[in-house]
Picture 1 (cartoon, one colour):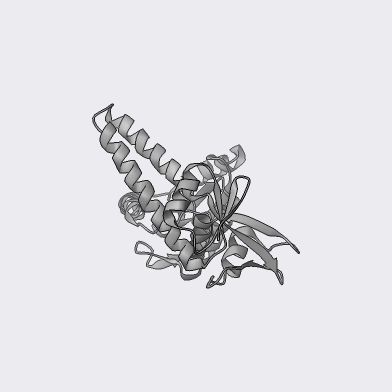
Picture 2 (cartoon, rainbow, N blue to C red):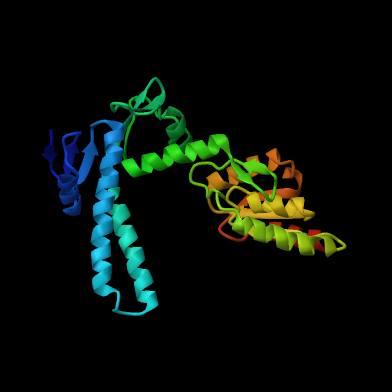
Length: 261
């Protein structure tokens, strides 16, 4: 069954991928009220159609413009694809002080949504893109299980909205550089890290001998996440995490400079 109200279409298990794709391309929002897993399949089916469309457009334009033009077109295509898929939405509601997704075969979203959005107030509801909810559920598993960091030999635990170091190449690079240079500094090193995220690089630098690490991030979630990880890894006393847009305040920078002298 499918009914339309303004620019929002209520879709369920009977809505075909072609019908969904056509409505989404016209700018309509699909409010999914069918089976949870069928909703995931619908997203994948629409995504395949978007991918084919982008490929057809790419063939027509592949000889036009520079490499930079091609890169920008690819970014535009990805943004357009995310925008279209983001119009498949679901409704979350409060029940007994927790978030509930009232769909057939839906997983328990209380923990993940509480972690991402905070506890709901009484009677609160929230409409969110289905793809965003999938991201929330996936991020919560990283938060619960942690991410193994070979350079540390331990795990870090990302919070929702904080970059997760699931690929370790850049961490290994920093570890190699720190291992080569930090021990040679007689007075020790004071290091400033910009955009700390989970705090993984601050931990690596501290483990490699930095006497003081000042780590900044503009995201309050990242600041709290980094502090928790650094304390858990046993280097919290040598690492200060500051909420700042790139650079810490002048007084904090002065203290860091003094520590390096």
